[in-house]
Length: 526
Image (cartoon, rainbow, N blue to C red; front, top):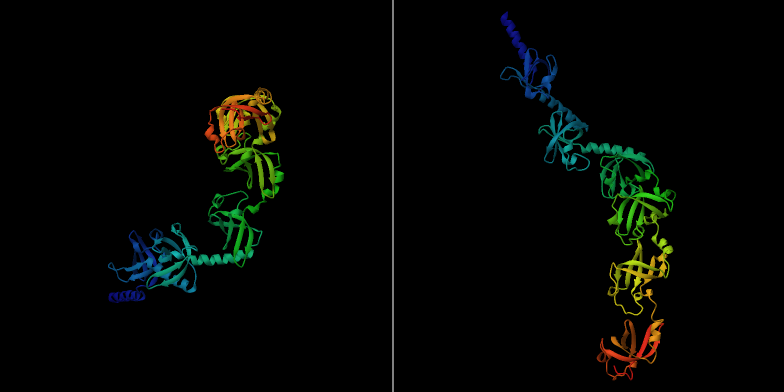
């Protein structure tokens, strides 16, 4: 009887093992969970063991006695009499079956990007490792795809080799398919003038590319703002969601031109009403140049303050020395042109014109005192008050003296009294004379002092081709024309006369109107 029971039991075990095959997947029931692994019932009176290394992630803490699980039979008899089992390989076999099915049917699979390798990245699909080539990571080649590590994505299987455990997948293929479908939908909805939403995809110096949903549109920098911007990055960043206007759309070429500033009216359309001539405004300096400063009145509207309209006094100042970008300035509106999109402004018009004041303050013939501000070859500039300079021409310094340069008689910073000879406020000019402080000797003294026939003496001050100039007294000169000098035919004046020589002559004519005294040396000995 006992022998019969033993034989039956032995037969039962044999039948059980015959049903079990190595490298097969069977269902089992958890009998016991231990720190080093799990004992599983895989058949009648047949126990298997799954070591910790062959369990799936966190499975040791999740499983409990009585749970059903699928296992992979690695060995029917291990050293301890157990059937050696593996959960990882069971899932791996199932995953390979799923992958082969997806590959044959062209279906996508889900996986996690786990790391970088030479030429691409690694992907885990249900515990099976696959290779993602660098050219198949994204639609556009990317230099750095580290941000994708750890991310779950959908992939298309490009190639599968079970024997070599080799799987090649593509993320780009699915993205392109998705983008193509989205593109078809977007193309059906686009029309010129409509406002659409998009995402900033790329920025360049000349504009931004906006993803409208499977199709990119170009937002040129000139269509971003009614104001001036130097780079699209001042307004947008990659990834920004924006609303744009379709300016033009070519379905055949798939080209879309976008606008951002067109979402609101051109501010120049209402500038003449908004900024009347003569009105005062506050603006922000946005550019300084040698010829003036540009002031932003509002976004897209700017005006120019020409250098000549900055100050009544300083006519040739450098704007960048007095203004910086961002400064707030007040100005008067001089001119507005909607067509030319130009507004002329003035700062100096905020203050009275000193020349308008001068017109009523000064009169011809008036004696005034000023300080010599500057000396030039042709005369001296005299500061009468803030913003008002008068010109003392070199010819108006003395009635009679021959002055080579104003510095011979005047010094910078010197206080001088002068007489106003003319006033032209509209030209911002006042002419003054120093000689006018005394009567003109050519009208009173000289005609009575020098008469035709008088013998006179003086010093040679200049010898020229046509004669010799002789100084008769301080500032009074006479000319001895070459025809009034007795000399040999081949004799030169320079040989007979030198500067500083004392000579005697006879007055033959006095012309006060031309301020000339004509002399003769014929019959005279110098």
